[in-house]
Length: 111
Image (tube, rainbow, N blue to C red; front, side, top):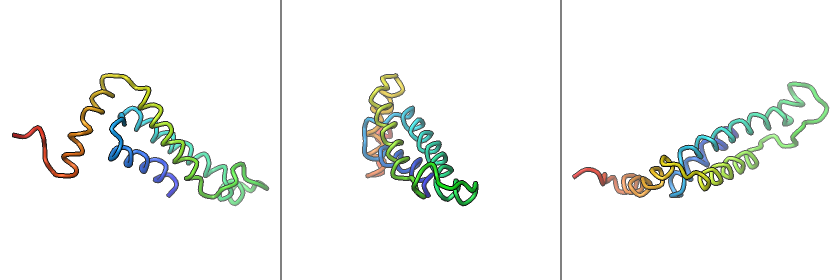
């Protein structure tokens, strides 16, 4: 649950509602969400105390999605804002076509 919330949710929400999202930022944010959620789950009480047998966890919460999802969102936004590549410009330009196709089912390229 934590992994899917940290990887998929930020990318899906920003892809649907934010014109500035770039592919490079979506990949980076997904990776940050995945790696941070795995690390914090392992450092949390369910693994660190219950399985490894340590006295106290390195990270105090069982479900770190609040932190990992926030890290993914911040990563996606920062990288999207800093990305000025030609691919990023194409991603931003295609947003209106994506919304038109998603909301109305119309393909602006078909005649």
